[in-house]
Amino acid sequence: MKLYFAGAFTGYKVDKLQSLGMRNKLYSFHHEKNLAREWGKGLLLDSGAYTASTKGVVIDMDELNEFILEVKPDHSIQLDVIGDSKGTWENYKKQSKVVEVLPVIHSNYTKSEIARVLESSDYICLGAINYLPVVKVIEWLDYMFSFPQIRGKKIHLLGIMSRRILTRYPVYSADSSSALSAIRYPAGTQIGKYNQRTKHYTTFYEEPIKEQLEYEQTLTELWQKKGITF
Amino acid sequence: MAKKGNNILKGWGDLQVTQLLKAPWNYKGESSKLSSKLLNGLKENGQIETMLVRWIENTDGIDYYEVANGNHRLDQLNAAGIDAVHVFSLGECSLNKAKKLAILLNETRFKPDEIKLAETIRDLLGEEHHDILAQTLPFDANEMLDMKNMLDFDWSQFSGKAPKMAKNRHQVITFELSEEQYQKWRTCLEIMNTTEKTKSETHAFINLVESRISKG
Image (cartoon, rainbow over all chains, first blue to last red; front, side, top):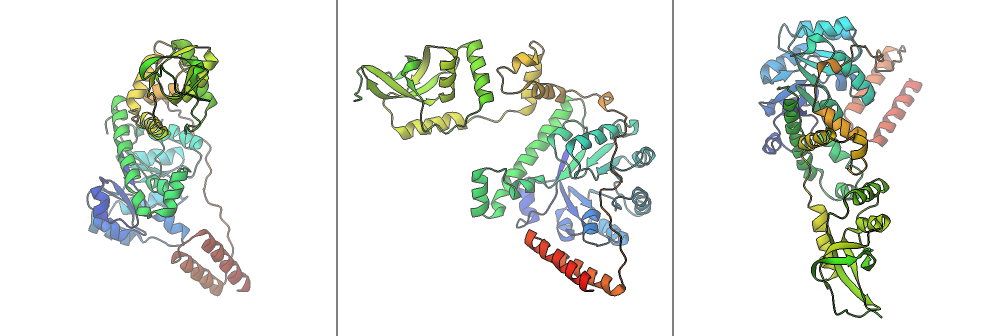
């Protein structure tokens, strides 16, 4: 299983992050172009459509496609239209004529829309679920993984890194900025709060990065035991 | 008046529980759930882990020892009605040395390998009921069943029933603006995009939007 680090590790350059063992990184076309250009192997490029939409910015598909052709990420996520399954599917069809992108399924898709996307690609993203309560996420993912077409496909979970989820579903990859959350919100410990007040934030990057890499290794071994090899 | 005894235990030995004193400096927290499991374990297995103590005083001819490691066990030894315990005594030892050893013993435990732990629990569940294991092990029955289930995988476990989902995660408010008002709105968005959005700045932004729209 591949766990992509999302979010900006401000203050650390790309080579520093890579020297800490970070291989898989998600960057957003919308606001992290320069970092994405630098990353090299292990890059998953997200359009950043959601973040852009919250700021009233529209992502230009032609510009995104040009960027993908220039940077050549390992994988790129299609330009989706938040809350619009038809628009997202139209975008996928249009974009995949120019560049190879991963289609996205959102939690509001109908059965036929889900089946259509599952049959369109070998690597698919499941998204718009990270804001839901975990019980709802499990209900929906149980439903998703009941589709016969999903077996044998590579699945990416957008914005999810929960142990309960990643030990339950045989997903190929996932991304989250949770490694950074551990720094922003230091688990309520007194020493964590003290460190946050007194030390520079970059001094906290190394431990959560190491933890996520160990987590990735543990999940890979766990799924091997369950008979699933990614 | 406390005086030095003639027979201070140093090294391995047995003491009466009544000779042991809790360390007031013990930094470990309390948990009624864990204490209950500890008591059940003592009842089931007796004392299977040595306690670390240091000599404190002799009163009325009896030597008393402070527990450096095993203070929670001392409570449960009393609750279980156990009279004598096996200890390692540091003899006469400074307070700081006892503190150092307590930290050393408690904080140098390795993290478990989650998969191997789950496999071990699965093996135990093959022989004992989860409710019995939960009486002494530091997990509840559901946690142990989750560990066991975590090791298995079967596609048929996933239900084909579509859950009810909200059609759209966004709340949408539609209203008409004049071209001028729209441009003011765009200006506000630009301000937000170029501003570090701390909480107070976000409030300031909202106030700015409201004031501009109402005046517009």
